[in-house]
Length: 202
Image (cartoon, rainbow, N blue to C red; front, top):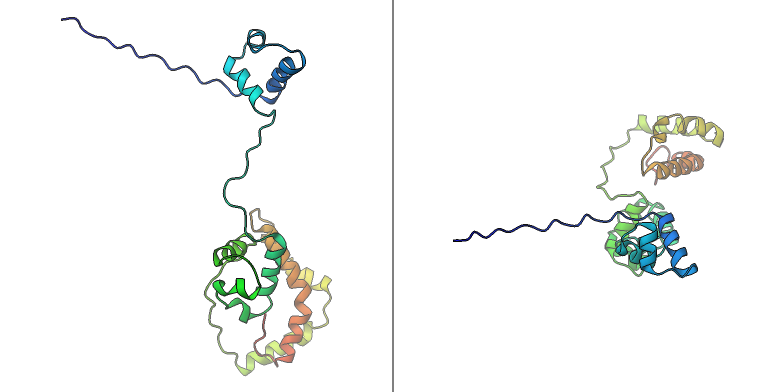
């Protein structure tokens, strides 16, 4: 009985992707010199498929970004952050109610994505301990001593910690928050004095 043998066909090696200069060379020979594809293959040594692919695609193919585009634009996200930072009451409002309040045509998922893109997350607020009379007096004294500080003086304190210079995706967000802190310190001191050392909306 004769034996049957099966000899597998070797796979053809995958052609290497051509560089931009190689694709430009093929385009020049085909469109400017009016060479045929076969002539280009013989002259350059590229495969027929490589030549056809180079003529079919752009010289610098650009891949489009995957995924859905953000629903909220940059100005809308800036408005959202300003609104939620305005008061503690705004920060306690459920995300599902924010689009209706700010007249935004989006869902609560878009609100969550916008906050994440701006470097904010939602967390359960920690319960603040009650302020004793001694604490209030210390807060009042500290606020009165620093009420008339200049921004240059606050810069020396707020920028003394160099950990913000560590690389990372939140670096720019941290820098902007420190700038905002320096700018609002006089108002924070005034709020402590007006509250007689009690809690303030910051």
